Length: 71
Image 1 (cartoon, rainbow, N blue to C red):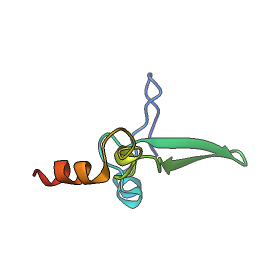
Image 2: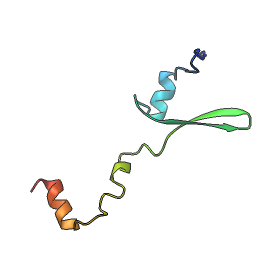
Image 3: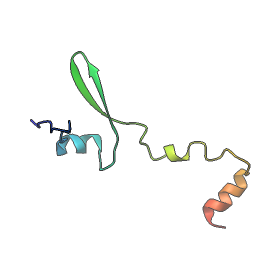
Image 4: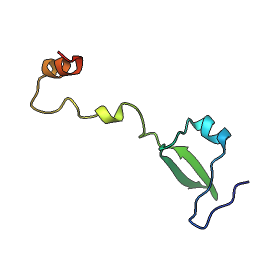
């Protein structure tokens, strides 16, 4: 069982990291449920989140596609 450091840090076991797909820089969430602390992978850390709102603006979709293709 891991121990908490003076700074409140705890090492997450490899088994748990692998099971949740956690890597360096992954965000996690702690929540309390029935007196237990639950660790969850932050679902906001999805590969497509950086593209939300990308198509908004003054450019047409054709201009954006050309830019993405490198034309």
